[in-house]
Image (cartoon, rainbow, N blue to C red; front, side, top):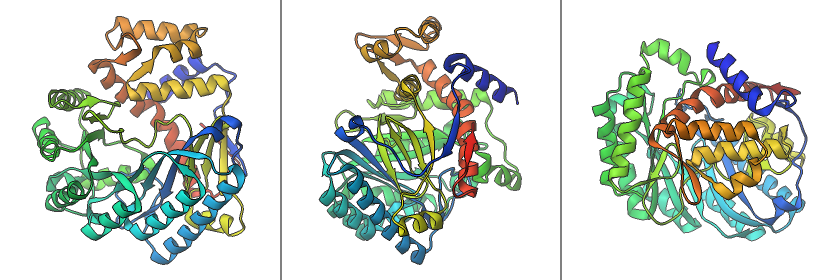
Length: 424
């Protein structure tokens, strides 16, 4: 209750009382010329062979017959976007889920369709679970044009994998990474920290194992305790205890120090990568179209959400209607705040663009002065950069600030096909 009160007060102080934080029912996305210049594309495939209890994303247990209907609906959605916006330029494409790599041939077909309808000038990237990393599947994905693969390892240790409900062991995780690294040059490994009863030494074993593969990027993130992801009931079943703040801080700094010492550069609050190539991230783009059940689109006119339930998504597209369920109106000022939130996530805020957007926002300017005085933010020639200390506190603030709003929106969207509105 205290956290909710503080975050609400923080939001009202900076955004003002006039800002209405509400998603409202909507029937289709609206575009401006800005959106049609070039955009990113996110495709959400909401099927998993095993649904992990901690995962907050829109997903259901795999059903091959339903999946066939889903991909037919997705094909229709892609066609409808082409009819609406024409042959626009696509600057990157991310397949997320769920477990999109469960369907390598269908993903290949989707890529062919997108390439035929749009001008693709960027990389195709995909998330993959260790259990899906067969040589045959990976080769199909590579032949289809996938360049970057993010492997959701989470841990290489059996004890950790058991605690978070993963359906494989450490040997499967190791073999998966070996298979991916043999076929792809650009590889990200996801690891989790702040696990129940996890020690710092235990965490560093996973980090060192990830480093041993020489992958281009390593992303680490804490166990988020979303109530709707079943982790609440799962915690009671396992009788586990989450790490306290001090232990979490120690773990975050251990990750930070270890990866920086190994010549990985910080590219987000969670991610560290080697020099060269593009970073793997599906969330920090300034504008993108989202396709698939539960996918979001960030456009100049606002933020849109597709309906979450897969059957409703399929039914809508069967009538050749956009599966859009909700829209969050965003004026220029709100777009600026959204931009700033994700630049903090990137750990770098370009000075010139920041000044163009916030030169008259005295509260934001005072916030930046405060962060610099307390050693959380440094000003360089071209950027404001989060320090080691600032990165930790931002990761913690994100956990408490934004996730409670995501929780409220996602909870209703998962259970109501087309809500009238969701206030958050």
